[in-house]
Image (cartoon, rainbow, N blue to C red; front, top):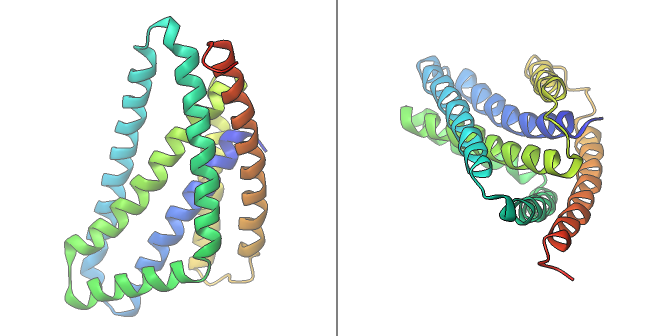
Length: 208
């Protein structure tokens, strides 16, 4: 599994599950008018994530040569730390995330809060989108090769397909094991980023 596929699959899956939970609550409470708020939030989150991606590219492309290795090393170490922290947080919050999202969505749906549903969708997408941008950039630095668009798109498609099947009632899918396997692979990826980050900082003369 390529790093790009792993990253986009895991991040898209997490965002998609939040959206699916909110959509389920809206359907259950028959608040169909709030669906436009949900999809507007998703669209705004995607646009914001794309803007972040362009911003990151502009920042790195404008760096002077003597700062490139330092920036690459720091990016890899920050991405590794964020991956490990997020995995620890997800482990601690296991079982509570769905309950929290459902409760929050129910409150917004009961009151008919357009902006409440919009915000839930927006922040779910932009959070995972920003993480995706950072992790993909770090993976490119680590592998020293061009971005794998095929792998990235494949990860998004797989995650959305899996979420759709779950939304349609196919609850026999091994979601728990999918998260466990991808978490293990992300740990391996994070360790690789730490090694790469230290190497870059050493070559830049920051670490001896």
